[in-house]
Every structure is written in C-alpha cells, then in structure tokens.
Amino acid sequence: MALTACLGLRDRDSHVPLENKGQATSLSIFTFNIMTSFDLLNLQHYPPWIQRKAEVLRIIEAQNADLLSIQECSPGQLRELRARLQDTYTIVANVNYTPDAIVAFKKDRFTLLERGHWGLGDPYVPLFRRIAIWVKLEDKASGRQFLFAGTHLDGRPIKNKEAKRIKSQLEEERASGAPLFLTGDFNIAPDEEGYPILLSDGWKDSFPSGQPDQPTFPRIHLQRRIDHVLYFGDQIHIQEWRTVGKKEARISDHLPVLVKVQIDATP
Image (cartoon, rainbow, N blue to C red):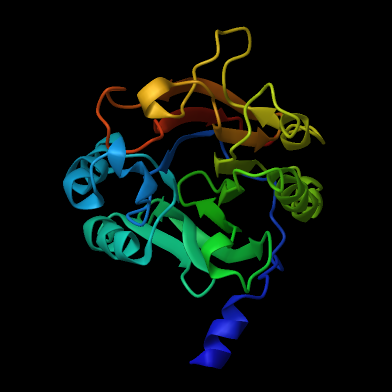
C-alpha cells in the first residue's frame, strides 16, 4: 500500500504526441470549485456539504458539458461525484496524491488517448498538495485530438511558481498545433502578478475581451475572477462564456463557469 501511494506522487508525463487533425467540432467546458467538505472556516457563510451537495450535483449535471474541471474535491465528495456521474462521464483523478483537482469527459463522445498529472509543490505535505490533472482525448465523430487539463493553484504567492511549472510542462504540447485547454481555480485575477504568466507563450483567456470583468469569487461578495478556461490554438473560437446559477445560492464560495468553443477543421 505504501509503495502504491509513493508511486502515485510521481509526475506522470506525456508520452503520446497529439496530432493536429480532424474536422470542425464544438465543445462545452464547465469548471467549478465546489468548496471542500473539510472547509470548516467557511461554515459561517456557507452551509455544510450535506446541505449543499444536492444542488451542486444538480448544477453539474444540468449543464450537460462535454468536459468537466472540478476543484476542492474531498475523497468523500469524489465518491459521490463518481456515483452520480458514472453513467455519463469518465472521471480522472489521482487520489493517492490529492483529489483537489479532477477532470471528467463524456465517455460516449471521446476516446482517452493518455492521462497523467503534474505535482505542483511538496508532495509530502498532505494538506497543501497541489496538482494538475490532464487527459489527451480524441473526439470520436470529428477525429479532433486535444489536451484538457484542470488545476487548483494555491491562494498564497507560491501560486505564481505553480503557474510557471504548469506552463513549462505544456511547452512541448504547443509544438503539435493541436488545441490545448487549461482550466480551474487559479487564485489569480486579471489584475494580479501571475496573470501574465498564464497568458504567456500564446495562451489566451476565454473571457470575452472588452467586456466588463465578471468576478467569480467569493460568492458572498464577488470581487475577483479567478476561475478560468484558458486555451492555446488559433483554430479555437469562443462562442460563449458565462457564470452558472444564482449568485445568492450559497452552494460554494465560487461561481461555476461554462464556456462553449468552436474548433476549426484542419486543412
């Protein structure tokens, strides 16, 4: 058991190159920090998980998104997500490392080419493990291949180093020209030091340019847009960006975000 856990802490890097091929297609991406059931400090502002979970699960299901990125997921919450979503989604997580960030994809639409993870900090400090979970998928109908990653960066200044680590891991993937998506709770708003790191090397924010900013955190007094769907690839076009659910419904301290994209065919 100890050996298995130790192996789970090592990075699982990519070995399957993406191909920039396929017909035009569209994707819907949903990212949501569901607020962990262990967050006792927030109980003065938000109900416990047992009172929130029905609406959280309903909202996730109601979007019918092709791709899910979920953050702050405790082991118990992960079990409930699996039980509720298993008929529709394949959930990818590394419980040995941390379920703090997980991703999921529709099993009837995509073929899994490869999966992996990158640890972003000290793996031997259990309460503060940070991870990026990624999958390489092929859309069965269009043949379009892409990488989809989800993460939850720290709220402390170390988040900038974590962002740099993720971006360095993604450098080789850019060479393929295939679409890349990086999603989650970055704890970095557009006016903060780490934001240019996220958008370096040709990466873009799916939030519509020129529009008034729409904060996603904290729900009780919205101030910062820190939940992002970032992308790389000139063939990607954003069709819609919106927050989901009623702001006054305190099912989490974050607002979930739904993004719809169009991907051009490869000539």
